[in-house]
Structures are given as structure tokens and as C-alpha cells.
Image (tube, rainbow, N blue to C red; front, top):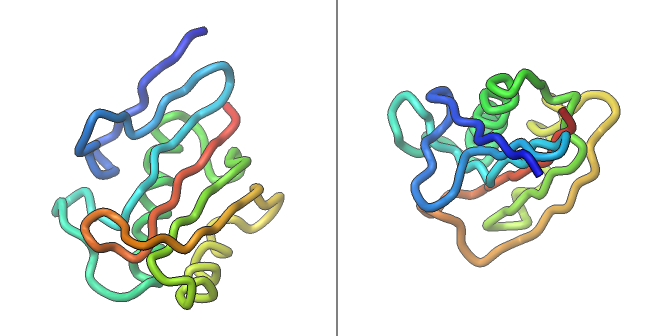
Length: 126
């Protein structure tokens, strides 16, 4: 198995023993992204829509670094701190995934890092 670590300054740095993304065997595995603005290192202000927007921008930056885009994404997992935010998250999500939608799972969780409202991880084909 060959694997390649993908890292960009245009997405938040990994804050633990993990990589932003790993390319292996024709797939790109993107670690869960939270709504940190990479230019400030801080969580974006606003509600679920603003946070989802930043998460998807971070994912887009990682995809671009790997030479891919949102059309390459085949699976996402969305973690929400409150399932009441699902519809608003979904509204923003639908602007990024506009055709040939990826498979998806969405879960309500007790708590996310830094108290954020949303985290999204994904798998893309290279």
C-alpha cells in the first residue's frame, strides 16, 4: 500500500496526532474538519450556517491541494452538536454538493472540539 499525506496552509493545521488528509489506494480520506478559519486559527463567528460554510471551505482547500474537488467526494459524515441544526446545515451543504451527491451519514453528538456546532469528514476518489 502506498500512502501520501496531504497538507495545506489553507485549512486548519492538525492539532493532534493525525493528518488533514491521507491519500491511499485511489482514495482521499479527509479528517473531520471543524469551522476554524485557517488565517486566524479561531472558530468563525456566527451560527450553524457560518460554521458549516467554513467547514466546507476547509474541505475544499484540502481537496484542491490533492488536485480534486467536491465532485470527487463519495462519502461524508456530518456530526452535529444539535440535530435541530440539521436543516440549516443541509441548506449550506447543498450549495457545495450539487450533482451526483455523495453518500452521507449525519449524527447528533454530545460535544465537538472547541464547542463547535458541526464537524464533517469525507472520503473522495482520486
